[in-house]
Image 1 (tube, rainbow, N blue to C red):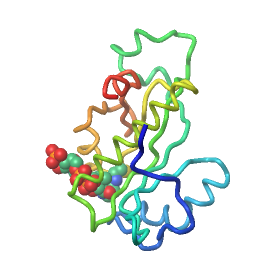
Image 2 (cartoon, rainbow, N blue to C red; image 1 turned 135 degrees about the vertical axis):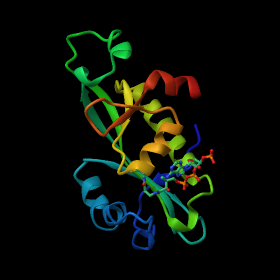
Image 3 (cartoon, helix red, strand yellow; image 1 turned 60 degrees about the horizontal axis):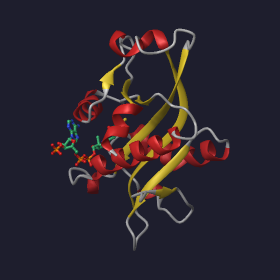
Image 4 (cartoon, helix red, strand yellow; image 1 turned 90 degrees about the horizontal axis):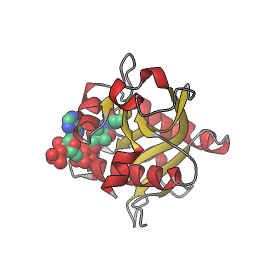
Length: 166
Ligand SMILES: CC(C)(COP(=O)(O)OP(=O)(O)OC[C@H]1O[C@@H](n2cnc3c(N)ncnc32)[C@H](O)[C@@H]1OP(=O)(O)O)[C@@H](O)C(=O)NCCC(=O)NCCS
């Protein structure tokens, strides 16, 4: 399977990345490498080939969500003994301002879902979860079939649904 992104490397120009949300910029500038070293997250970037400018990035990590938070129609099919359901978290996803509105966000999301789906064949994961930063981000994920998790700002899409896409 081909991927748009590669693992974040020293040559990528982290400090030149600006998406308009300081929290997401600062994460890439100051924290991503430490989290990677500590094995808390994996970070993938979509670099511009000649310049190594980062068009966009996302992070992936293992995660769980309480079964009680999953909507009834989906929860019914899950064994009751699984109190915490294994999932994959897209912790952050952002596109540099210069490249927004050109389909990069969509491509990054597809890339992240593809990696998550492949990983779920080796390490169980029931769904991909996102934790949208604000209303705009919620609208973005709704567009791609994510559901809101009740009583939390998080959203998810079942891995089975992702499997149908690929
Ligand atoms: C949200 C974000 C990732 C979208 O990336 P992008 O490259 O601008 O989006 P795309 O050009 O790929 O757009 C894909 C689709 O999503 C829609 N879309 C993009 N931003 C949207 C928004 N804020 N609200 C609703 N829809 C949005 C586009 O209209 C497009 O739909 P279309 O294909 O029907 O035209 C980008 O704007 C961003 O990085 N924002 C700041 C960080 C952020 O909020 N990240 C969200 C995760 S916390």
